[in-house]
Length: 296
Ligand SMILES: NC(=O)C1=CN([C@@H]2O[C@H](COP(=O)(O)OP(=O)(O)OC[C@H]3O[C@@H](n4cnc5c(N)ncnc54)[C@H](OP(=O)(O)O)[C@@H]3O)[C@@H](O)[C@H]2O)C=CC1
Ligand SMILES: Cc1cn([C@H]2C[C@H](O)[C@@H](COP(=O)(O)OP(=O)(O)O[C@H]3O[C@@H](C)C(=O)[C@@H](O)[C@H]3O)O2)c(=O)[nH]c1=O
Ligand SMILES: [Mg+2]
Image (cartoon, rainbow, N blue to C red):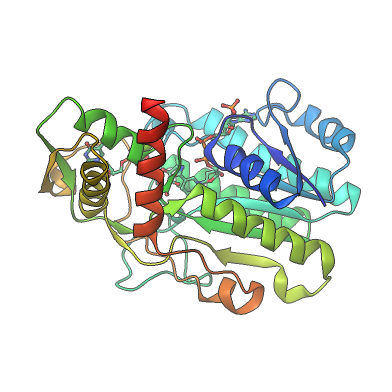
């Protein structure tokens, strides 16, 4: 199976390359300048040349706060780019997997979100990603849209790396304790995406297609996530800091974020047979790997 994934250095693309190599799956990353999501005219030729069996759109404009001051670019990449990728896959007659986000929800529900719960994004990032979901679904029925959340990995920029960096130079830091969600390892996600890709390539079934939630098992707050990162780091001899729990009101940001964006992943388990590991163990593995690589 040849999997073509958009982006070069992103967390999910790097994870797919690593896990694909281990699983004997041919993963090809297509990034700028060959494929630029902000320039949809070139997308079709780039995808055609890679001759995929399945396409994964893992590239996106992911700077949640910056998007508020760059809405045109965020929309071009997250909506226009996603549409071009899905159309290119449809032209080749192959399935497309679109990666989306928990930030399509406003967080007002008091339970984990299901796929059929109404979306109501609070900011430009979430709005543009929701538009991307709609554009992919309109371009082809042969799609799976996978909404994930709070992604971290040894690659790129993420909350785990931020906490370890800040923890190295401070005794205490303040982290919001009133936003709940599901931390997700990009490496765990890569295994899961490859399993979904296999199912889509092998089977024409309509119920394998559509919208699915895919996050790490369990849920937490950003403050408790930070505590877990520092606990893992301490036990491996790495940096740590005390976490002071604060409220969202104490931590003003350009973009609003959902207070609850836990995802109910039951549909993915039921139809694709895919369940991601509990977030705690995967966070500990990521932290130990980062510390090991930093000292190597
Ligand atoms: N990070 C998170 O916490 C979450 C992410 N998601 C979604 O998961 C997916 C993967 O996210 P993640 O791996 O963390 O992303 P990253 O922020 O780590 O990487 C973004 C990727 O997008 C690529 N990219 C950005 N702009 C363009 C462009 N114009 N043309 C081509 N490629 C571009 C980057 O390219 P380059 O390699 O050149 O830098 C990079 O590979 C995205 O769809 C995101 O919306 C969902 C929930 C949570
Ligand atoms: C660094 C830091 C953040 N925070 C807060 C801000 C915010 O509410 C929360 C997380 O901050 P971040 O900026 O790391 O995360 P954020 O950019 O909001 O992460 C999101 O990224 C996009 C791409 C997604 O799709 C989402 O699922 C989600 O992962 O923690 C603190 O309270 N203290 C801190 O020291
Ligand atoms: Mg951020």
